[in-house]
Image 1 (cartoon, rainbow, N blue to C red):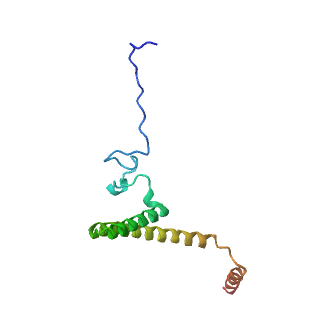
Image 2: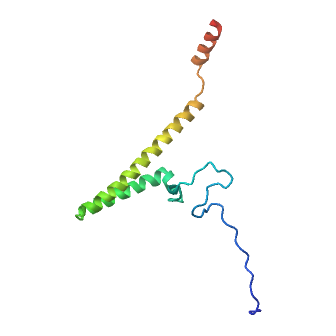
Length: 125
């Protein structure tokens, strides 16, 4: 083995899913604004309804524990965090329900009565 030889390391390509501060979401499209809050949670857990619910319950439990320990300020702080996650949970529920209603209305099979009504309305015109 030759220890005197200097090694040349290849530079690693930059990962596509990692953005540095101040970088845009897509370099090709300039219509997407760079919102600082979007980078807050990189793993996307704020979009997963189960993670949001779990986090909300965690903060509610922390608030109960702080209240039982005699710290009302910390308890109120945890309750505010839990309230934030409750609002996000409700947003995700509404979004999910609206998409379910949309897919159900699109996938709804046409019944015989509806086809008979269409035929009578077409023949009367």
